[in-house]
Image (cartoon, rainbow, N blue to C red; front, top):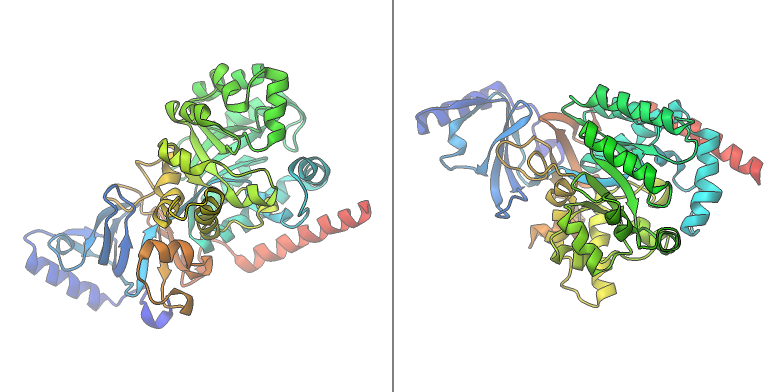
Length: 472
């Protein structure tokens, strides 16, 4: 929203006046830290409540009130601060269920190539040459800046040096499920399998009590390690009580590999070794049939649908309409920016809705409301965090965003869900909040130094570019 339409820190007189009016109309009032008022509040709760002239009341990290202004409920609160947000929309922060945050430093390194070529001839060599602790830190900071500016408040990540990513994410104030990548060969941060296991144990111990960071373990894929290794990971996840993040059934080549080596398709193979469980959050799940969708649903596996990355690498189209009908824990993900090439969840929503319409010849499948659901409460379900985030409800974390609707491409509004999914851009987000803490206000980052991050990112970009030219 524009500065003239919004007052971030309302004068004390206004807060006092609201408090006095509330006290007069309500027998008892309770103090809150902040009330955001006057906006359209899209709750994404189970009743699909939308309040045209709504409010959200926040105390500490949590939401304590949501509703329509002028009613009995909003009169009960005595706010220390009021944000007047008329002409805007308040909705839950977006949830990116699959990415590789530091790969923002590799966006555009290799475009218009197929997945196996992209991995073996571009990503692996570049990461081997350049991926250091400093590279991961700068990449994480750049990714966090992009996500906050676009209204993403929670993300699930699979990468290396995940402890450093956790540190930067916590400092920036963003919520995340962070999985240390596990491979059956030397990785940039751990030379041996034993080193990786020690790293994971220390990583979990350090972050298990964080209110923002959920530490996890992330075996790369069903084809990247032996069944024995996967069973070891499953046991470790159970012992440490952590999630497991994994690429599953992303491309036809993966299906061919597991059929040849394990006698089953990826999901069926994982089920046969007892790997499917509520701990598992699978990315992509493009090549799955009806029986496998049922297996995923029965085992409460979280699924991160990444339509743009799948389209760009031509790996196929996930059967999302069937997944929705089966009641899967289905969210949206961007994948890493090296294969997307951004972390924009608004584009992902728009693409998810349109892609499945065209491949099914049915304009009614994956509605705007379903696409927004996948990016909010659906993503929370995929991460098994729906009791804490994903909708604006009393008791949940105050993870929310404010979207300005005054730009020419956003007027008029007939259906709020359609407007949010098909018309809103990341640049229309004007405020991002996580756990009651404002991370961006009026398009200005408050927890990150944008100019410094961009300068560092450009420096690494020059190093990568020079090495690519040398290889040519």
